[in-house]
Image (tube, rainbow, N blue to C red):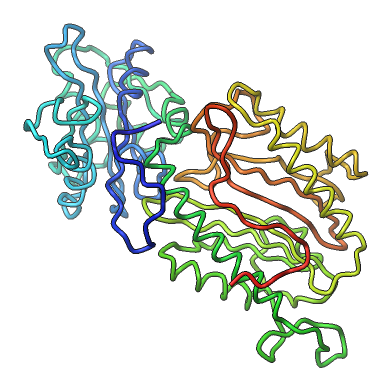
Length: 440
């Protein structure tokens, strides 16, 4: 898949310049036309991933809006998209939303402000008038201006997550609102340029993992003040927080943000899927590292490995072997057209074959979550490997089977893969092994 940019395969260094991403708004136009609606509207701020994806506008910490109106049936009027931006962010909106989508921005061709100037045939503009009004009011005004007298009681498609107050303003202006999953569907299949971002951040994720594994490998086993076995690094007890800081320093050096998503658990806390507290790391216990930083243009990485310092081959070894087998079983199912649920089903069946409960509830012993989820500008997005629907080329998903015992610990192994035309590609390879080794 492509969005008109040369694909960034992530081979450049972390500080190299990335070309502006372009979102194809044609599927949004088609969704409006297919639903017999008049326009599409989204309202949010920089924390709204749908709106950030649609506009590639990353700046405003206050609400703004996007309105998309299809062209005329006879082709005399082009499809148009208006970003109602805060005045202080107008220059950035012009650069990211308009100039970044213009054909001439990369190809040296510019035929002005017509639809032919833009890679997807949707003419873009930024409006900053009436900035004192609510973003929903501004969107309603933009839609009314673009539609003119062509529609009475317009029907607008909106994302399911549109803020309630924005919906109220749009309805007060005489618009009927109808929810659409068009944005979710568009986001699920990544372009070549998006895959470049994902490869880049996933390689940074792997570098963070290598730092953590190396720290564990060079640590020494000793005793704490109470005489209990402990793991020491650079002369001091190693804790999950110390290890987290070591990982995050590497992520920052690679130009990505940890985003509060460096999850490290040790012993019983390794059975907590989102542990970010501080616990001592002890020999013989599982150390689970789930690293999910956010990189350029908001795209996430996601990788999990599990290690044991000075293990004795007990529960953790049996769990590790089972999870490795479940991972291989899940990967073997990935190809276009396969029902997403099949991938989860095969992983669960493999874990059951090793004697672990494949349907354990939260806080119980066994497999307590799904096998994977989509990753993009959100850490969790479509598709889900536990939901209906088939895998398609361009889907980027995690493969992350795991088993847990709240009294002992947890084991999870996770990679990020893209579905290709004939199978899958792991976006950044990283070695496996329960005993930590030096990787730096």
